[in-house]
Image (cartoon, rainbow, N blue to C red; front, side, top):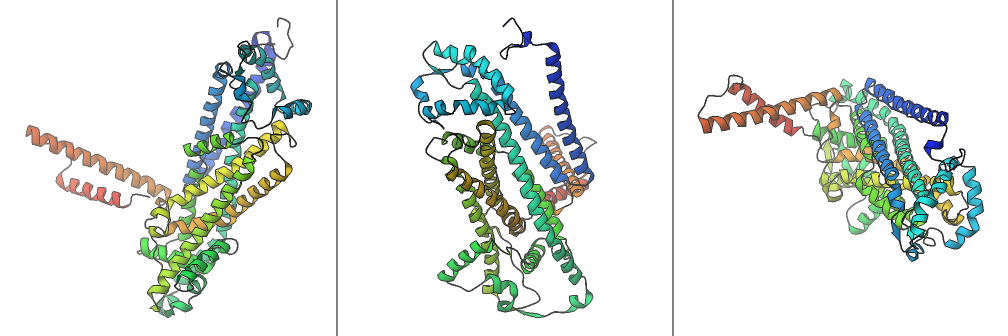
Length: 500
């Protein structure tokens, strides 16, 4: 190793200009990425997009977490490769059989040499013999994980994070473009409501003849209830939300939660609520990492696990879309059963009872799982394509790979253009409202108000306790009773507006 130039040379035999050059490039790329995220955050703050700014912060947190995972793999890679296990334990649960390895070595090497990751893989391969396999082979055992496998795992984690963030962003982007068409409906509704002539007209509405009821409610009975579920299933594929649906659900929300302001802009509120939910979708929660580990475990040759796993997000997406459509039908059914004719327009009653386990947020959790599993499928495909190429044994047979891609694209489109817009409006049909009902600057003031109320309450308790025990007069800086009563009233109001 004394003579320079070999691909297995350590840093002490590497020219200093090479080290400086590589460090410069890495630092420059890192600084550019950091500045881009910084200016993106400033732009969102300038445009008063507080929710999207929080989503950007969530992306930064995920990148830091993945960077920490990568750091752990790098620091402990020598220790991992020196963990030895019996050789017969490495003969089962393989993505590729040992016979496939002997047949495909030459092709894999040619592909690696044309790959972006060629330099890192050659360094790892050169270092592997003395540090990893050599150590375990002396004991007639096999390493738990080779350096090459650790390197592949590094790349997989990076690709998974990038694909998940990109696909989540694309879903929100396409869904938002779809929802923006509803702005015209909001403008026309407000224009009609602000017209004094139409506001004075009090017409009698025959409920069964109303367009919303006719489209959503077909009658009472077990057969008709089953038919309602079937119609909800197919309705998510075409015209999931019409203008009459939007207008009726909007009216039900305003009458239930914002009766004092009939001109409330429901569209803006709905968009803000969707932005707040986006920061939840873009993150990778702990239970999603369990899915990753489980999927990696099941990637055994002959099982075609990734093919069958591809159906999970599709099935979940169809179930969620059907449920959201059926909630609208349930709201129509309640009105249809309760009234024959009413004065004015029909009003639906939002309630948590229509959602699974009375938890509207559970739908968002399922959408999060759907998007992550779908992005996981796509990430695995690109990871295998880059490292092992399309016709490798780990990729699987073409008859299983192509359907996976088709299902992934289908899930992405259906979630963007149907399920997400459905969720955006139906999620507001719960018993409580989202904190997005207030503008960002009002939320900041309310948060400060609630915090001050809590501090005042704690201070009063401390003063009352000390006066009862020590029989002392309260300090001079304590607020008078009138102010305390006002603080108590503030605290009560703060609790009333606690966001869901």
